[in-house]
Image (tube, rainbow over all chains, first blue to last red; front, side, top):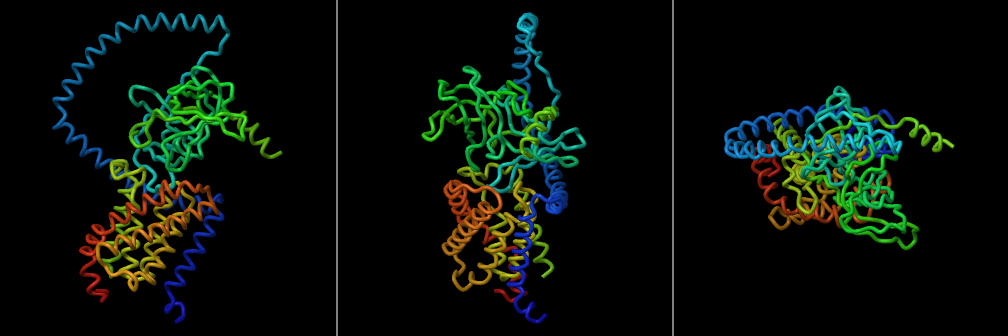
Length: 289
Length: 167
């Protein structure tokens, strides 16, 4: 006992090291997950509370300072609204024509999904990981693998996918994370590819497995292909910065700049779309073989 | 000593909040944020010894791991290891002034970064590009913030350090 007290820092170091190594070795087991869950449950209320207080103060302050700006914005918005109202008739005519043409071509109707608006309350505090935490969770109908989008610069674009859901919060892995992989295609040439984060600390993505036959231009728009069963087809992901052919590969790679800036995004929408279970069952079967 | 525990707890929680909350994203330079919990851990190991630093590193690291998407233990172990080393050798090697404080934090951050990279390599995913994109910028950033933060911590713990005979 005396030896332990005399060498308490060495004993503590060995104990903590053992704990960390055992925990990391068992990281996929329920023990680690539930333990992490307990600590997470303790810390999250503080973050939510801070977010609430900060939001309240910001709103009160904004009420005093932004009145003139709001009045100007209102005038501009009214003018825009009138413009959009005149566009409505034109739009409905185009929609009718689009439906008719789709019917003629025998194309499947595009499914519209509901979405859950949510605010980002926290980002990963460490530089080694890139995740986002939102203020909606299982109680709001969010489930794992649901796609997440945001509006930035008037454009709807992909943010990432839900990887962890708790009662009132969820964790999102953004598309700049190397762990997230999405089936995408080039909007203009329709060549498909696989998109994932470029590196742990970069805000860029790489699009791999693009056919060498594809002619890729700067600023080509990349959209989701709908393959993979998580993201609906046609969502904007980003634009091409450059492309190059890999020496040892039969494919090209493109560097993609996401439309949504990880550092600036504040509000997101979780699309209420479940994963295509049939597709995932096929993957599981193949994995087990 | 109770006040020391209270101050330490408050510092860890505030650091975690600053590092995680979106309203402090302005702190991000060259894509990285400083590791405030780590700076506090180095200070506490330096001033109160290895054991206190290790315990703070362990608790702070677990909280850091829980809030982050990292596997439990990945961000904890490097902090504990550096706290142990700083507590053992810090005082004998570094006299407390602006230059040596920065140097201490720079060396400690490099050590933490390389231990994390090794742990990522063994238990998670690692990329050598992290040395340039994460480890080096974070080490410089931590070293830059060390003198003002050490000054603030000195003021916070002044009474306790005197009472416990560390000064």
